[in-house]
Amino acid sequence: MLSFNSFSVIRGEKTLFKPLSVNFRSGDLVQLVGPNGRGKTSLLRVLAGIFSGFEGQFSWLDEQVPVYLGHKTGLHPGMNLLENMQQLFNLYNLEHELIDSILLKLGLMGYESTPVTRLSAGQTRKITLAPLFHPALHQKPWLLDEPFTSLDQETCLLIEGLCLEHAERGGFVMMTSHQNCLREDVREKITLLQLEEPEPQVIEDYDYE
Amino acid sequence: MTSIRNDIRVALSREWLLLRRQSTHLINGFCFFLLVGLIYQIMLGPNLVMPQGVGLCVLWVLSLLSILLIAEGWLATDLKSGFYEIWLSQGRSLWLLFAVKLFMQWLVIAMLMLCFVPIVGFQIGIDMQYIPLTLMAMVISSLAMVCFCGFGVAVTAGQTSGGLLTAILVLPLNIPPMIFGAGAVMEQMQAYDYWPVLMLLTAISLGAIMLIPAVMGFSVKILVE
Image 1: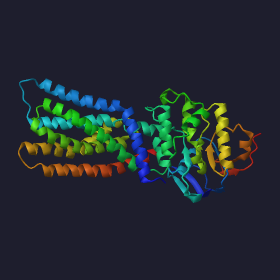
Image 2: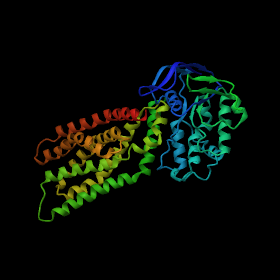
Image 3: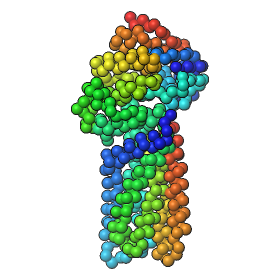
Protein backbone atom coordinates (compact mmCIF):
# COMPACT_ATOMS: atom_id res chain seq x y z
CA MET A 1 0.00 0.00 0.00
CA LEU A 2 2.74 2.47 1.01
CA SER A 3 6.47 2.04 0.53
CA PHE A 4 9.31 4.14 1.91
CA ASN A 5 12.79 3.85 0.51
CA SER A 6 15.58 5.71 2.37
CA PHE A 7 12.93 8.28 3.20
CA SER A 8 13.43 11.17 5.60
CA VAL A 9 11.74 14.52 6.18
CA ILE A 10 13.68 17.78 5.98
CA ARG A 11 12.79 21.11 7.59
CA GLY A 12 15.08 23.88 6.38
CA GLU A 13 18.59 22.41 6.72
CA LYS A 14 17.60 19.86 9.33
CA THR A 15 16.83 16.18 8.69
CA LEU A 16 14.11 15.27 11.19
CA PHE A 17 14.74 11.52 11.33
CA LYS A 18 17.21 9.01 9.91
CA PRO A 19 16.33 7.39 6.53
CA LEU A 20 13.40 5.03 6.75
CA SER A 21 12.83 1.99 4.50
CA VAL A 22 9.64 0.06 5.14
CA ASN A 23 6.58 -1.29 3.33
CA PHE A 24 3.09 -1.06 4.75
CA ARG A 25 0.34 -3.34 3.49
CA SER A 26 -3.37 -2.81 2.93
CA GLY A 27 -5.12 -3.38 6.22
CA ASP A 28 -2.36 -1.78 8.30
CA LEU A 29 -3.25 0.69 11.02
CA VAL A 30 -0.11 2.69 11.71
CA GLN A 31 0.37 5.07 14.63
CA LEU A 32 3.24 7.52 14.36
CA VAL A 33 4.83 8.23 17.71
CA GLY A 34 7.76 10.31 18.80
CA PRO A 35 8.61 13.52 20.61
CA ASN A 36 7.38 16.91 19.45
CA GLY A 37 9.24 18.28 16.43
CA ARG A 38 10.42 14.87 15.21
CA GLY A 39 8.47 15.14 11.95
CA LYS A 40 5.24 13.21 12.50
CA THR A 41 3.00 15.94 11.11
CA SER A 42 5.50 16.78 8.37
CA LEU A 43 5.58 13.12 7.32
CA LEU A 44 1.80 13.08 6.96
CA ARG A 45 1.90 16.37 5.03
CA VAL A 46 4.49 14.93 2.63
CA LEU A 47 2.29 11.87 2.07
CA ALA A 48 -0.71 14.15 1.50
CA GLY A 49 1.20 16.08 -1.17
CA ILE A 50 1.23 19.45 0.58
CA PHE A 51 4.84 19.52 1.75
CA SER A 52 7.82 18.77 -0.45
CA GLY A 53 10.62 18.75 2.15
CA PHE A 54 11.85 15.17 1.96
CA GLU A 55 14.70 12.97 0.75
CA GLY A 56 14.45 9.46 -0.63
CA GLN A 57 11.31 7.97 -2.14
CA PHE A 58 7.83 6.96 -1.16
CA SER A 59 5.07 5.49 -3.30
CA TRP A 60 1.40 4.70 -2.91
CA LEU A 61 -0.06 1.56 -4.47
CA ASP A 62 -2.05 2.60 -7.59
CA GLU A 63 -1.07 6.26 -7.01
CA GLN A 64 -4.01 6.78 -4.66
CA VAL A 65 -4.98 10.21 -3.38
CA PRO A 66 -5.16 9.86 0.40
CA VAL A 67 -7.65 11.54 2.70
CA TYR A 68 -5.75 14.00 4.89
CA LEU A 69 -7.18 15.46 8.09
CA GLY A 70 -4.66 17.82 9.64
CA HIS A 71 -4.39 19.93 12.78
CA LYS A 72 -6.26 22.73 11.10
CA THR A 73 -9.96 22.30 10.50
CA GLY A 74 -10.41 23.93 7.10
CA LEU A 75 -13.75 25.31 8.32
CA HIS A 76 -14.81 28.84 7.45
CA PRO A 77 -15.94 30.98 10.42
CA GLY A 78 -18.45 32.80 8.22
CA MET A 79 -20.43 29.64 7.50
CA ASN A 80 -22.65 27.51 9.69
CA LEU A 81 -22.09 23.85 10.52
CA LEU A 82 -24.14 22.44 7.64
CA GLU A 83 -22.59 24.77 5.03
CA ASN A 84 -19.10 23.91 6.24
CA MET A 85 -19.88 20.22 6.11
CA GLN A 86 -21.29 20.50 2.60
CA GLN A 87 -18.17 22.35 1.47
CA LEU A 88 -15.97 19.71 3.10
CA PHE A 89 -17.93 16.96 1.34
CA ASN A 90 -17.54 18.83 -1.97
CA LEU A 91 -13.77 18.90 -1.46
CA TYR A 92 -13.71 15.11 -1.17
CA ASN A 93 -16.27 14.69 -4.01
CA LEU A 94 -18.85 13.18 -1.67
CA GLU A 95 -22.63 13.22 -2.17
CA HIS A 96 -24.59 15.15 0.44
CA GLU A 97 -27.32 12.53 1.04
CA LEU A 98 -25.59 10.96 4.02
CA ILE A 99 -24.89 14.20 5.87
CA ASP A 100 -27.96 13.91 8.12
CA SER A 101 -27.16 10.36 9.24
CA ILE A 102 -23.52 11.31 9.90
CA LEU A 103 -24.61 14.33 11.93
CA LEU A 104 -26.79 11.99 13.98
CA LYS A 105 -23.90 9.57 14.60
CA LEU A 106 -21.66 12.41 15.75
CA GLY A 107 -24.29 14.00 17.99
CA LEU A 108 -24.36 17.18 15.92
CA MET A 109 -28.03 17.01 14.89
CA GLY A 110 -29.79 20.25 15.78
CA TYR A 111 -26.64 22.36 15.29
CA GLU A 112 -26.91 22.59 11.48
CA SER A 113 -27.56 26.33 11.37
CA THR A 114 -25.14 27.19 14.20
CA PRO A 115 -22.12 29.26 13.07
CA VAL A 116 -18.95 27.23 13.62
CA THR A 117 -17.53 30.04 15.76
CA ARG A 118 -20.18 29.16 18.38
CA LEU A 119 -19.32 25.46 18.48
CA SER A 120 -16.94 23.87 20.96
CA ALA A 121 -13.48 22.62 19.93
CA GLY A 122 -14.73 19.04 20.13
CA GLN A 123 -17.77 19.74 17.96
CA THR A 124 -15.55 21.49 15.40
CA ARG A 125 -13.22 18.49 15.37
CA LYS A 126 -16.19 16.20 14.79
CA ILE A 127 -17.12 18.15 11.63
CA THR A 128 -13.64 17.64 10.18
CA LEU A 129 -13.85 13.90 10.92
CA ALA A 130 -17.34 13.55 9.41
CA PRO A 131 -16.17 12.70 5.84
CA LEU A 132 -14.55 9.50 7.18
CA PHE A 133 -18.04 8.08 7.75
CA HIS A 134 -18.86 8.33 4.05
CA PRO A 135 -18.52 4.99 2.21
CA ALA A 136 -16.88 6.71 -0.78
CA LEU A 137 -13.78 7.34 1.33
CA HIS A 138 -13.56 3.72 2.47
CA GLN A 139 -11.44 2.87 -0.58
CA LYS A 140 -8.79 5.49 0.15
CA PRO A 141 -5.84 5.61 2.57
CA TRP A 142 -6.45 7.84 5.61
CA LEU A 143 -3.85 10.21 7.05
CA LEU A 144 -5.05 11.54 10.39
CA ASP A 145 -3.09 14.10 12.39
CA GLU A 146 -4.08 14.00 16.06
CA PRO A 147 -7.67 12.91 15.29
CA PHE A 148 -8.62 12.51 18.97
CA THR A 149 -7.75 16.07 20.06
CA SER A 150 -10.62 17.71 21.98
CA LEU A 151 -12.92 14.71 21.52
CA ASP A 152 -14.94 13.17 24.35
CA GLN A 153 -14.36 9.51 25.25
CA GLU A 154 -17.47 8.31 23.43
CA THR A 155 -16.40 9.93 20.15
CA CYS A 156 -12.80 8.70 20.59
CA LEU A 157 -14.16 5.15 20.80
CA LEU A 158 -16.33 5.78 17.74
CA ILE A 159 -13.38 7.07 15.67
CA GLU A 160 -11.13 4.25 16.87
CA GLY A 161 -13.80 1.78 15.76
CA LEU A 162 -14.06 3.52 12.40
CA CYS A 163 -10.28 3.25 11.88
CA LEU A 164 -10.35 -0.43 12.85
CA GLU A 165 -13.22 -1.15 10.43
CA HIS A 166 -11.36 0.70 7.69
CA ALA A 167 -8.22 -1.35 8.24
CA GLU A 168 -10.19 -4.61 8.39
CA ARG A 169 -11.87 -3.74 5.08
CA GLY A 170 -8.39 -3.63 3.56
CA GLY A 171 -7.93 0.12 3.90
CA PHE A 172 -4.91 1.87 5.31
CA VAL A 173 -4.71 4.29 8.23
CA MET A 174 -1.69 6.27 9.35
CA MET A 175 -2.25 8.59 12.28
CA THR A 176 -0.33 10.59 14.82
CA SER A 177 -1.50 10.61 18.40
CA HIS A 178 0.15 11.32 21.71
CA GLN A 179 -2.40 9.20 23.50
CA ASN A 180 -2.84 5.44 23.42
CA CYS A 181 -6.01 4.13 21.87
CA LEU A 182 -8.73 3.21 24.34
CA ARG A 183 -9.99 0.05 22.64
CA GLU A 184 -8.03 -3.15 23.24
CA ASP A 185 -8.82 -4.57 19.76
CA VAL A 186 -7.56 -1.37 18.13
CA ARG A 187 -4.35 -1.45 20.18
CA GLU A 188 -3.75 -5.04 19.07
CA LYS A 189 -4.15 -4.06 15.43
CA ILE A 190 -1.87 -1.02 15.60
CA THR A 191 1.65 -1.00 14.17
CA LEU A 192 3.78 1.68 15.82
CA LEU A 193 6.21 3.71 13.77
CA GLN A 194 8.51 5.36 16.28
CA LEU A 195 10.33 8.40 14.92
CA GLU A 196 12.90 8.44 17.68
CA GLU A 197 16.69 8.40 18.06
CA PRO A 198 18.86 6.66 17.00
CA GLU A 199 16.66 5.69 14.02
CA PRO A 200 12.97 5.16 13.16
CA GLN A 201 11.62 1.81 14.25
CA VAL A 202 8.55 -0.22 13.29
CA ILE A 203 6.99 -2.16 16.20
CA GLU A 204 4.22 -4.60 15.26
CA ASP A 205 3.30 -5.94 18.70
CA TYR A 206 3.81 -3.15 21.16
CA ASP A 207 3.31 -4.02 24.80
CA TYR A 208 1.13 -1.23 26.19
CA GLU A 209 1.61 -2.52 29.75
CA MET B 1 -6.60 13.66 -9.17
CA THR B 2 -9.76 15.58 -9.84
CA SER B 3 -10.97 16.96 -13.16
CA ILE B 4 -10.77 20.64 -14.03
CA ARG B 5 -14.54 20.79 -14.41
CA ASN B 6 -15.00 19.35 -10.94
CA ASP B 7 -12.49 21.80 -9.45
CA ILE B 8 -14.36 24.69 -11.05
CA ARG B 9 -17.72 23.40 -9.81
CA VAL B 10 -16.45 23.05 -6.22
CA ALA B 11 -14.72 26.46 -6.32
CA LEU B 12 -17.80 28.17 -7.78
CA SER B 13 -20.11 26.72 -5.15
CA ARG B 14 -17.77 27.83 -2.35
CA GLU B 15 -17.14 31.33 -3.74
CA TRP B 16 -20.83 31.93 -4.33
CA LEU B 17 -21.56 30.94 -0.72
CA LEU B 18 -18.73 33.14 0.60
CA LEU B 19 -19.92 36.11 -1.43
CA ARG B 20 -23.34 35.80 0.23
CA ARG B 21 -21.93 35.24 3.71
CA GLN B 22 -19.23 37.91 3.55
CA SER B 23 -21.16 40.67 1.82
CA THR B 24 -20.08 43.14 4.53
CA HIS B 25 -16.66 43.46 2.83
CA LEU B 26 -18.36 44.45 -0.42
CA ILE B 27 -20.76 46.82 1.33
CA ASN B 28 -17.86 48.50 3.19
CA GLY B 29 -15.88 48.93 -0.02
CA PHE B 30 -18.74 50.46 -1.94
CA CYS B 31 -19.93 52.65 0.95
CA PHE B 32 -16.40 54.08 0.95
CA PHE B 33 -16.62 54.60 -2.84
CA LEU B 34 -19.98 56.33 -2.63
CA LEU B 35 -19.29 58.44 0.46
CA VAL B 36 -15.84 59.73 -0.54
CA GLY B 37 -17.14 60.48 -4.05
CA LEU B 38 -20.02 62.51 -2.66
CA ILE B 39 -18.02 64.25 0.09
CA TYR B 40 -15.33 65.23 -2.43
CA GLN B 41 -17.76 67.38 -4.41
CA ILE B 42 -19.32 68.83 -1.25
CA MET B 43 -15.86 69.85 -0.01
CA LEU B 44 -15.13 71.65 -3.29
CA GLY B 45 -18.26 73.74 -2.87
CA PRO B 46 -20.75 74.98 -5.46
CA ASN B 47 -18.58 77.68 -7.07
CA LEU B 48 -15.60 75.54 -8.08
CA VAL B 49 -16.16 73.45 -11.19
CA MET B 50 -13.77 70.53 -11.36
CA PRO B 51 -12.34 69.72 -14.82
CA GLN B 52 -13.82 66.47 -16.12
CA GLY B 53 -10.37 64.87 -16.51
CA VAL B 54 -9.66 65.38 -12.80
CA GLY B 55 -13.05 63.93 -11.95
CA LEU B 56 -12.23 60.82 -13.98
CA CYS B 57 -8.92 60.32 -12.16
CA VAL B 58 -10.70 60.69 -8.81
CA LEU B 59 -13.21 58.05 -9.93
CA TRP B 60 -10.49 55.54 -10.81
CA VAL B 61 -8.46 56.17 -7.65
CA LEU B 62 -11.62 55.69 -5.60
CA SER B 63 -12.42 52.41 -7.32
CA LEU B 64 -8.88 51.12 -6.72
CA LEU B 65 -9.05 51.98 -3.03
CA SER B 66 -12.48 50.35 -2.72
CA ILE B 67 -11.21 47.14 -4.36
CA LEU B 68 -8.18 47.18 -2.03
CA LEU B 69 -10.54 47.45 0.94
CA ILE B 70 -12.63 44.54 -0.33
CA ALA B 71 -9.58 42.40 -1.18
CA GLU B 72 -8.14 42.51 2.33
CA GLY B 73 -10.03 39.45 3.54
CA TRP B 74 -9.85 37.28 0.41
CA LEU B 75 -7.23 34.77 1.54
CA ALA B 76 -6.43 35.30 5.22
CA THR B 77 -9.30 33.25 6.68
CA ASP B 78 -8.83 30.25 4.40
CA LEU B 79 -5.07 30.30 4.94
CA LYS B 80 -5.50 30.37 8.71
CA SER B 81 -8.19 27.69 8.76
CA GLY B 82 -6.14 25.22 6.70
CA PHE B 83 -8.64 25.11 3.83
CA TYR B 84 -5.87 25.33 1.23
CA GLU B 85 -4.14 22.29 2.77
CA ILE B 86 -7.22 20.14 2.24
CA TRP B 87 -7.71 21.59 -1.25
CA LEU B 88 -4.11 20.70 -2.19
CA SER B 89 -4.24 17.28 -0.52
CA GLN B 90 -7.02 16.28 -2.93
CA GLY B 91 -4.80 17.04 -5.93
CA ARG B 92 -6.79 20.16 -6.79
CA SER B 93 -5.31 23.19 -8.51
CA LEU B 94 -4.92 26.43 -6.56
CA TRP B 95 -4.65 28.22 -9.90
CA LEU B 96 -8.24 27.29 -10.74
CA LEU B 97 -9.49 28.17 -7.27
CA PHE B 98 -8.01 31.67 -7.49
CA ALA B 99 -9.13 32.14 -11.10
CA VAL B 100 -12.70 31.40 -9.98
CA LYS B 101 -12.32 33.62 -6.89
CA LEU B 102 -11.04 36.61 -8.88
CA PHE B 103 -13.64 36.16 -11.60
CA MET B 104 -16.54 35.94 -9.13
CA GLN B 105 -15.29 38.93 -7.15
CA TRP B 106 -14.93 40.90 -10.37
CA LEU B 107 -18.47 40.01 -11.50
CA VAL B 108 -19.95 41.35 -8.28
CA ILE B 109 -17.69 44.41 -8.16
CA ALA B 110 -18.46 45.19 -11.82
CA MET B 111 -22.20 44.93 -11.16
CA LEU B 112 -21.94 47.26 -8.17
CA MET B 113 -19.88 49.68 -10.24
CA LEU B 114 -22.62 49.75 -12.87
CA CYS B 115 -24.93 50.98 -10.10
CA PHE B 116 -22.62 53.41 -8.29
CA VAL B 117 -20.34 54.90 -10.96
CA PRO B 118 -23.13 56.92 -12.66
CA ILE B 119 -24.10 58.46 -9.28
CA VAL B 120 -20.57 59.38 -8.23
CA GLY B 121 -19.59 60.32 -11.80
CA PHE B 122 -22.50 62.73 -12.03
CA GLN B 123 -21.62 64.18 -8.60
CA ILE B 124 -18.03 64.91 -9.55
CA GLY B 125 -19.05 66.60 -12.74
CA ILE B 126 -18.65 64.04 -15.52
CA ASP B 127 -21.00 64.87 -18.36
CA MET B 128 -23.80 62.33 -18.85
CA GLN B 129 -22.76 61.66 -22.46
CA TYR B 130 -19.45 60.18 -21.21
CA ILE B 131 -21.04 57.94 -18.56
CA PRO B 132 -21.62 54.87 -20.85
CA LEU B 133 -17.96 54.77 -21.91
CA THR B 134 -16.85 55.49 -18.34
CA LEU B 135 -18.88 52.48 -17.22
CA MET B 136 -17.43 50.26 -19.93
CA ALA B 137 -13.84 51.32 -19.21
CA MET B 138 -14.41 50.99 -15.45
CA VAL B 139 -15.79 47.45 -15.78
CA ILE B 140 -12.89 46.36 -18.02
CA SER B 141 -10.18 48.00 -15.91
CA SER B 142 -11.70 46.66 -12.69
CA LEU B 143 -10.87 43.11 -13.85
CA ALA B 144 -7.17 44.02 -13.96
CA MET B 145 -7.44 45.92 -10.66
CA VAL B 146 -9.15 42.96 -8.95
CA CYS B 147 -6.38 40.64 -10.23
CA PHE B 148 -3.53 42.92 -9.15
CA CYS B 149 -5.10 43.38 -5.71
CA GLY B 150 -5.42 39.58 -5.49
CA PHE B 151 -1.74 39.30 -6.35
CA GLY B 152 -0.83 41.76 -3.57
CA VAL B 153 -2.99 39.94 -1.04
CA ALA B 154 -1.49 36.55 -1.97
CA VAL B 155 2.12 37.72 -1.84
CA THR B 156 1.68 39.42 1.53
CA ALA B 157 -0.65 36.85 3.15
CA GLY B 158 0.66 35.70 6.48
CA GLN B 159 2.69 38.90 7.02
CA THR B 160 1.97 40.96 10.12
CA SER B 161 1.94 44.26 8.24
CA GLY B 162 0.34 42.77 5.14
CA GLY B 163 -2.04 45.68 4.50
CA LEU B 164 0.74 48.25 4.03
CA LEU B 165 2.84 45.87 1.91
CA THR B 166 -0.17 45.08 -0.26
CA ALA B 167 -0.76 48.76 -0.93
CA ILE B 168 2.93 49.33 -1.81
CA LEU B 169 2.92 46.35 -4.19
CA VAL B 170 -0.46 46.95 -5.74
CA LEU B 171 -0.39 50.70 -6.42
CA PRO B 172 2.34 50.67 -9.13
CA LEU B 173 0.80 47.60 -10.79
CA ASN B 174 -2.55 49.35 -11.06
CA ILE B 175 -1.23 52.45 -12.77
CA PRO B 176 -1.59 51.06 -16.36
CA PRO B 177 -5.26 49.97 -16.02
CA MET B 178 -6.06 53.27 -14.30
CA ILE B 179 -4.31 55.37 -16.96
CA PHE B 180 -5.86 53.46 -19.87
CA GLY B 181 -9.28 53.33 -18.20
CA ALA B 182 -9.49 57.07 -17.59
CA GLY B 183 -7.53 57.65 -20.83
CA ALA B 184 -10.20 56.00 -22.99
CA VAL B 185 -12.84 58.41 -21.69
CA MET B 186 -10.49 61.40 -22.08
CA GLU B 187 -9.95 60.39 -25.71
CA GLN B 188 -13.70 60.53 -26.22
CA MET B 189 -13.88 63.92 -24.48
CA GLN B 190 -11.35 65.23 -27.01
CA ALA B 191 -13.29 63.60 -29.88
CA TYR B 192 -10.48 61.12 -30.62
CA ASP B 193 -10.90 57.43 -31.35
CA TYR B 194 -10.98 55.70 -27.96
CA TRP B 195 -11.10 52.09 -29.22
CA PRO B 196 -7.30 51.53 -29.37
CA VAL B 197 -6.97 52.56 -25.71
CA LEU B 198 -9.94 50.41 -24.75
CA MET B 199 -8.43 47.43 -26.62
CA LEU B 200 -5.13 47.91 -24.80
CA LEU B 201 -7.01 48.02 -21.49
CA THR B 202 -8.86 44.82 -22.41
CA ALA B 203 -5.55 43.13 -23.25
CA ILE B 204 -4.11 44.10 -19.83
CA SER B 205 -7.20 42.77 -18.06
CA LEU B 206 -7.25 39.48 -19.98
CA GLY B 207 -3.51 39.03 -19.42
CA ALA B 208 -4.00 39.65 -15.71
CA ILE B 209 -6.84 37.12 -15.29
CA MET B 210 -4.77 34.48 -17.11
CA LEU B 211 -1.47 35.06 -15.27
CA ILE B 212 -2.29 36.32 -11.78
CA PRO B 213 -4.21 33.24 -10.50
CA ALA B 214 -1.14 31.10 -11.27
CA VAL B 215 1.12 33.52 -9.38
CA MET B 216 -1.32 33.55 -6.46
CA GLY B 217 -1.43 29.75 -6.44
CA PHE B 218 2.36 29.55 -6.41
CA SER B 219 2.60 32.08 -3.59
CA VAL B 220 -0.05 30.37 -1.44
CA LYS B 221 1.52 26.94 -2.07
CA ILE B 222 4.78 28.26 -0.60
CA LEU B 223 2.91 29.70 2.39
CA VAL B 224 1.07 26.42 3.02
CA GLU B 225 4.36 24.50 2.95
